[in-house]
Image (tube, rainbow, N blue to C red; front, side, top):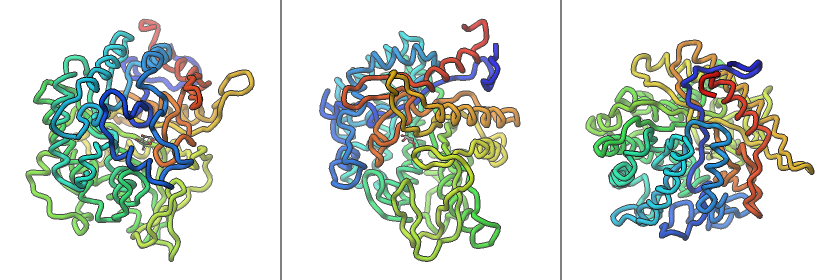
Length: 460
Ligand code: FCB
């Protein structure tokens, strides 16, 4: 039964929440875990706001039973977490760490007992340090190592995990990690970062094949996408926006869904053998989209560096990111533009037609940095407003014929927000980082009601 005010979705629509290993687990030196690119990056002075690290994070490694309880109470159907590669293969290749697998056994079994479908990502940016030191994703060999790892995890869990994601947001790792030096491994290669994009895509394709070979099924990817708006109708702005759109969106979707790279990018890419494209376009069962806000892009502005989350981008880039005015903003200063989600999804359907598999929204959410009031309650109404408006926008895309099967909110918990450390709070559940105390926020209870309202009387 629909409740007034809640957007209404089909009864089999999947409701979920998302997290990622380095952002929540902590216990970086426990259980035989090897170091990752992020452990090394956070140790470099000045990289992370307030010098924060993921060493303890939400202490989920020890508190996962409580977190499963919170999800059960919330009523979600599915949980998107990520495996830490270096917990399972401490060196990124070779020997498997039985204690690492055992941690995820406990987590997966606990989820299944709670009636929650594990929907994990194999890799959410925490490259094993030994592989990073050998070139990381700039090195083609990392794609092969990823396939070996996919085979290990798939082989171990295929009988218990019914939905899989290979890689999270290759665009952000490529651009912010190898291109702009804002994320691990902290390289500022500009366009020379693009081989990392190709190797991540190759890793994805090899990973799909490796998972299937060991009996895993229902496999997708979680790609970050943003509707791209040109700053004006002037030719130079249109061209800059189109280049950005290709680099931020289509370079990561076209090869998977059509088997080729956007033509406009040919001058920037090394020659790519057809055999690689055949691997990358190995059919997937569904396509995951992480989306937060659109991008406004224009020609470079003389000498002025654009900012991403407060970090300066190289002023010599052939495009510039502009401020989107006239919309509310989250506390991370991201614009809140729900209609851009409808535009993005409808654009996907127009671009790929029959080649587009069913879509899941694998991330969407907002940083609203409020804590408990004196009465202990966390009043994060702006997160509710953000989520409500984006779900209405998602429903509008479905009404326009886009096949969307589920929504995973980012995030279950406040967590380590990469370069911003603990300063940005995306959780439905508040974390007191001094004590690890969990406090469900107003948005948690709203999401719980929304899910109930959408389950219909039979399922309740
Ligand atoms: C995405 C990341 C996720 C989280 C959100 C806010 O780009 O995949 O880990 O940091 O942004």
